[in-house]
Image (cartoon, rainbow, N blue to C red; front, side, top):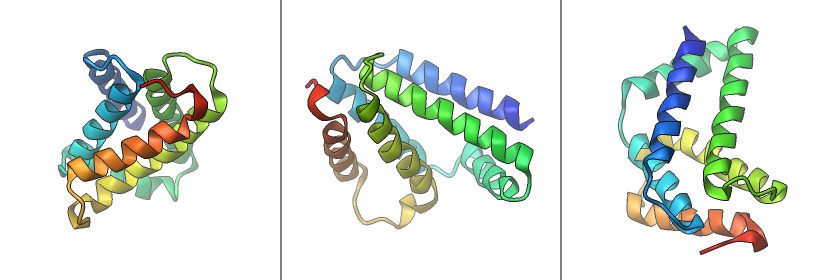
Length: 138
């Protein structure tokens, strides 16, 4: 059941990125961030499901392994969308380390933060663009 849920989440992310009108690296980054922040402000069934899966994963090694594999794939999809297959391993690792934990933490804390989505998206976009280093393309 959890694997099926993760497959649906991955498919949804692929559809969202495929349908994006973003053309530059900055637009791709900002698109992902705005999508993640907007989703994080909703208390959707998916958010509730993830909270439960996180809790179960602390006691169940099979669920924990599935969660780790999901996040590895999620992170790769984000990096592929932004870096379009470039072999910038340092930039990929930094981008993943910034965005994945931020998005997941934001799901829990969004409603208690003082910055609005626009300010937060701009701040994160600047950080993400800096994280990919010299390969940055506006």
